[in-house]
Image (cartoon, rainbow, N blue to C red):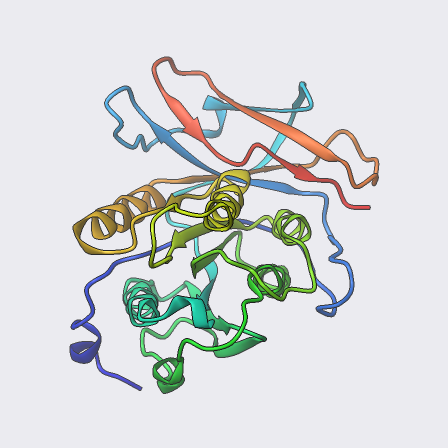
Length: 299
């Protein structure tokens, strides 16, 4: 274990929250949900871009496929969360692996006593570095993570969703530190996204690529990272270095401290595996809200 003094040498801040109630089976079998509850993690800002706190359940309304849904769960701000940090340790990460390690360590430094975080690394395989814990200390194995091998990003997201699906916390997050270039996963990006949806998990992605947008392949990899974040109501951070990254992480930390979590049981009980669109409305004027825009029904 490493002391806070050692950890404070690292420069980058990152944090993430998320949501509620699904169960996952074996990694190679489909995820199943033991509750119909659909959970939304919601950020609210005013016309100046500042976060708005102090709202009650009455301020929100939810529509699924255009039909109003009764809200059955509501929580504001101080709710425990479970998160999985995914460290890309494939060969394409190169020297950025040290930056990713630093971000993971600083994330742990900011958790509260009731929060639980696990760390996985992925290259040719997905490997556990540190299991769920509320400790701010870091397992020494994180410093053994080197950049090598192929990339199973989609398998890693699927695995993280499965592990979060077993957790009791109402907020769940997956934090992906990667260049987005998957080269060997047995699952598709769409299947990974469905798994995150089934686990009600928000995905925060950080583009750790060493080069600019450049090639078509690089653009596609970035697009996947953006899609993971946008489809789940998370944030995509595209500048992995310097003051810009620190500012982005600070904004995420601020946002997560004033989020709302609400849930509903869909009136449409069909288990057809289809996409259900979500529209979240707020009664007060001049406020903007951000959350995921839908989910895949269980099949």
